[in-house]
Image (tube, rainbow, N blue to C red; front, side, top):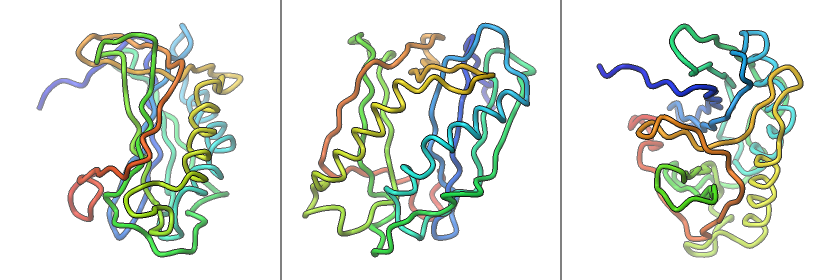
Length: 200
């Protein structure tokens, strides 16, 4: 098994989602404070993240999606701390419509001001309803909602006890680059590993 990757000041925050009996993840990378965060500080980051974005994320998804855990890991170097939070509000999607297939996603492309692939990233947002698409195109209302979420994530300062800047983590380059913009492709995309039994 390859060694675990580490980048100075890297915090990886993951929302764990249950759908059709399979675990999915929705992961975000942050540049944390200079001093390595404690487990209590990482737990606060998870709680603050969910209080800011939980209802928005739940609003994208159907009731067939459950949010079972938000956790954050200090990936600065070996022996980092870990914090977690079990959502007590917005713990499942809020759309009562029929779910689209589990692999269907809308993609946010993250911009950093650099052209290098090592400094760009994507988020594949899952959980959509069939009615969120006209054919293979995400409706304009959902594109606007996704844009508002993306902009809010870029400017979010993290928790008071654990400041964090939304960033791209480059394993190949061993660096973090703060995100400054985004683009959204309204065409339906696919992430096959979210199909039942395929992985995350």
